[in-house]
Length: 82
Image 1 (cartoon, rainbow, N blue to C red):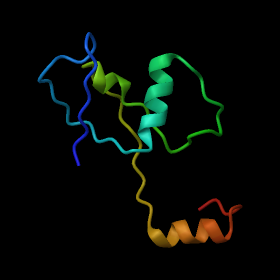
Image 2 (cartoon, rainbow, N blue to C red; image 1 turned 120 degrees about the vertical axis):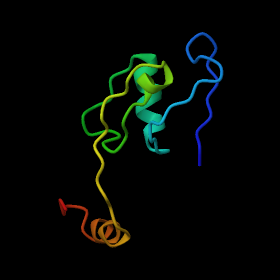
Image 3 (tube, rainbow, N blue to C red; image 1 turned 180 degrees about the vertical axis):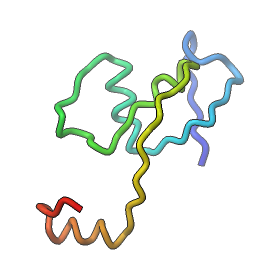
């Protein structure tokens, strides 16, 4: 699903980006835009796409495959690292 954003004065009309983003990245992006600093343990899986919005070259975002089985295991044992 594409992400469409309108931000007059920041996003050039008609511009596109190949940046892959997730709904979880919205939090880090908004926090980055407003200049707030989240605690280190908050939104650990959220990465800012603010640079992509402003037309800059975005930083490489770490990608980790995560399976449904891993999600169920971490719900069953929240202390489990991986």
